[in-house]
Image 1 (cartoon, one colour):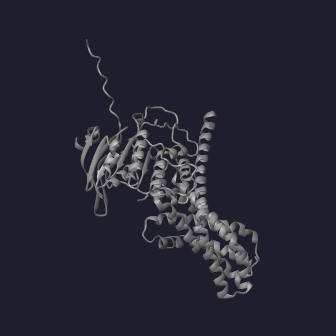
Image 2 (cartoon, helix red, strand yellow; image 1 turned 135 degrees about the vertical axis):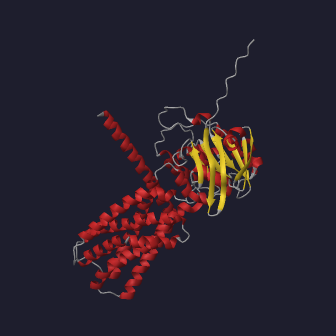
Image 3 (cartoon, helix red, strand yellow; image 1 turned 60 degrees about the vertical axis):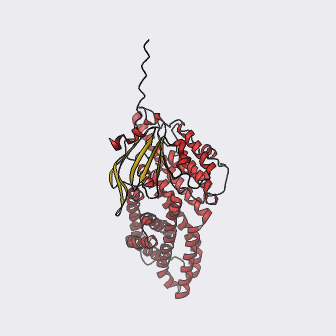
Length: 255
Length: 239
């Protein structure tokens, strides 16, 4: 009896790629010739000491800074052109202190979708606020929130943009262990959210392979459920890549 | 024909969406100001102080008042607006909200326009509160065509806030940004300042025709608003 041949698992396309990227601030090299790629639907955590270049790598992927040398591409384009599909959460909440979480989220939702969403996204400001454990009816301004609440509101801000590539810079930094675990659970759920489609679909999107997360942290034990690939950085270079998708991530890096 | 209509509909939808973004930024800035009252209170206090101090220092007669009032009014508004203009971008820098703005797919020029309109409303509010004090302290009544002030004040105010909003954003990443704004803005605004002051003086004294200066102000506004809108994306994206 002949066993039916297994269909080869489709290779996910690359969502984001850094090719020999260096970033210099004056004489200081924050990144040194980094080459790495992030496959669609992957979840990567980046570890490293302060000043290792983790945040610089994320900010390059977000298009907030430009590389001094090398190329950064996201969805085969520049990060700036694809910013509708990328979300970035920093150490700071990136929210207005004088507005409530709901007002902040509605404002950013309007900027994202222009009032007329036209996409199949599942995230609304109310839903994501509930999902992160905040009450949408809370009228208190964000400036009066605790650090943990601000961090959760900040996560809600990025999730409600329904991104295909989610970049998180030390998201657990102000959270207690329980809150951090809840955030990890939410991020695991987020990966299975249906990928949004904007306007008429003419060709299959890379997003069909799922959402991609790249996260930096000092607390590797908390982010373990998200660590399909673990990337370690030191002094602006990637020193190791480990995990289930390490080969796909490092294919370019190590030939 | 149907293709043309469809294109027109798309254009109108695009324009509607653009002005939707502008309105969203404007609404947000008005809400932030309503809750903090940082800009308007500061400006109001400063301009009132200038008006009172100048009137005490010079004790002008009605004729002298008409000659100098235009200059005092616009200089007070110019210096008061510096504080508000810097303040309006400081809010965006707090908590790194500006980075969220840079990552948003909404056009950068809509952020600029929304903020400039909000600043226009703040300065106009200050002018409206200031007007009765100005008339009383300087014993003013216009000898020329007073109704022309209804064109001069908004045109002059827009020249201040449009340039000011743009140059305040340019100075965001510099260390001495409070110093940078007047340093860049005043020389570039000289033609507009001349237009504002001389047209106001012409209306108050009735000695000359202010239309030339009003035309200059309008042309200046059209040119600088266009340049600011076109260049703002580059200014916002700069590291």
